[in-house]
Each structure stands twice: as structure tokens, then as C-alpha cells.
Length: 139
Image (cartoon, rainbow, N blue to C red):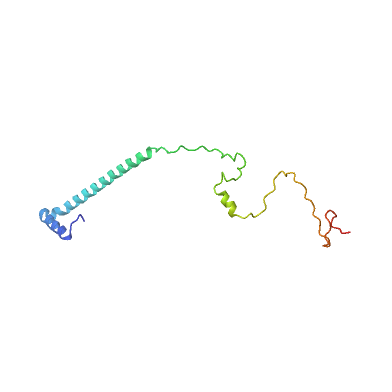
């Protein structure tokens, strides 16, 4: 308490008893106690008032936002179909196509090109295969 040891407190109490006497010592102790209580109450009130003023100023000042708020608008959809993947717009496409095996045959074009009709190949004789165009019946 206040950096005083027990021996120093005893010496102060003995000196107060000798100087004030047994009649005035209780009154002096009450007066000192009231004074300390009032001092503590005054410092607490001052501390509360300062904190109130500090926090009141913080609440009053509106901090400006760094970015203005964005208005709520619907997000537009895509403008059209996505572009075809080429080596120009997809980095590493050539390496990926070389490494990957085709899982399915390539899709046929939407507009068929005029291709010549396949010519039937003659079946070897004696094999029992019907000639093409006969409907699978052997005569």
C-alpha cells in the first residue's frame, strides 16, 4: 500500500497517536477517510466526463467512405455465344490437345458438305456374303 512496509506504517501510527492524542485520533481518521473518498469520487467523475466527451465526438463525426455505394442494378447477361477456343485466345491449348486423347469422335458439322457417295466394293466370291444392294438375300 503506497510502497510502505509494515514497519513504516507502525511508526506513522505511533507518531499520530503521540501528536494527536487518543481523543482526537478517531476524528482525524474519519476526516482523512472522508477526504480520500471525496477525492476518489471527484477523479472518477472527471474521468467519466472526459471519456463521454471523447466518445461523443467520435459518434458525431461521420467518417467518409472511401468508395461510394454501388446502386442496385441487375447484372447483364452475356452478349452472345462464347468465342471458339483457339491457340490465340487460350494459352497452352496446343499442348493440351497434343497430350489429350480424343474421348469421342469429332462432331459432324451442322451443314453437311456434298460428299460423293461411297462406291460399293465387290465381295470376295465364295465367302457367302450377299452382294451389296440385294437386301441381304442370296439367290
